[in-house]
Image 1 (cartoon, rainbow, N blue to C red):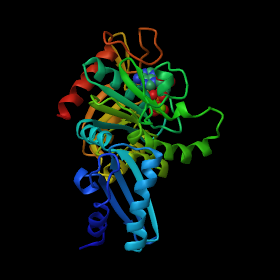
Image 2 (cartoon, rainbow, N blue to C red; image 1 turned 135 degrees about the horizontal axis):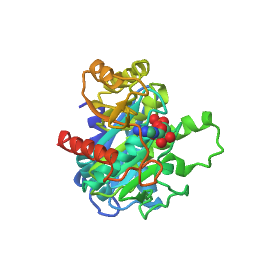
Image 3 (cartoon, protein in one colour; image 1 turned 120 degrees about the vertical axis):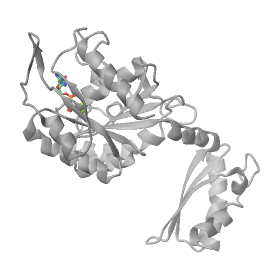
Image 4 (tube, rainbow, N blue to C red; image 1 turned 45 degrees about the vertical axis):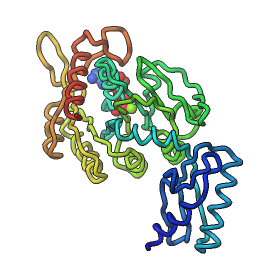
Length: 335
Ligand SMILES: Nc1ncnc2c1ncn2[C@@H]1O[C@H](COP(=O)(O)OP(=O)(O)O)[C@@H](O)[C@H]1O
Ligand SMILES: [Mg+2]
């Protein structure tokens, strides 16, 4: 029997104090790994009920097995609720993650993410939006949200905010804006872990859009790694000189086995007197898509919402319809 199996067999005999079932019976042993270097065991255990007393009790029983019987030096246990765990599993099966990435900032990544989320929602989909761009968080601003600390529910899960029917979470809600950028990076990177596992997203959620940090640096990549089985959209501008960095971002995503859904070229042209003016150059989106062997799935013109809102387009105006078309395509492609 290998080491993991041995641990599973022994820890499986531990009884959940609430249900009186063994972990083997309740399928409560959710995850086992061994850090050979540190001779430490990591476990995730699901219980019927979780409180401090129960945690202590189960930890004691498990520690006896791991440390005394099986002679490991260290033990780390994460507890979760069995029921909740099921719902998360269901959710993971159901929610489709779409990461929005770009080579550099300022190309409209957040604007596109927000308008796409809105378009999906207008098409009747249940949408979540995670603002994971720890360097230039702007989702709360785009949705005119007040920066207040989110509340937690009875299971200690953070309750997301809801704006225009979209469930939204951003690192911005956890920070006062006077923290230096250098400090924010690593700290927020850590926090993002919780965005995928400790937020009480509604169970009906179908699409989760993630506004990723631009670039291909360590932090950007670490955050991409957190997204389970994500599909990616790369945002670029039509400037050919800007395309190589967008291509790099695309390759980085591919390296993480994140399938590319396509490239969106933003600020493609300015519509003027029935003519398209290529103010920011031409062809960048196509170049990026070709290099990445994917499709150019959209070209968003330069423009401000007519509704008077600073970033979100109405579904009756041209760019809004553009986003609806894109959302429709995504729904088709992801089914
Ligand atoms: N198609 C567009 N036309 C005009 N302005 C745009 C367009 N897309 C984005 N912008 C503006 O460009 C700026 C940068 O966009 P943003 O979405 O914040 O970029 P990023 O998230 O890539 O840093 C914002 O002021 C935004 O309102
Ligand atoms: Mg942004």
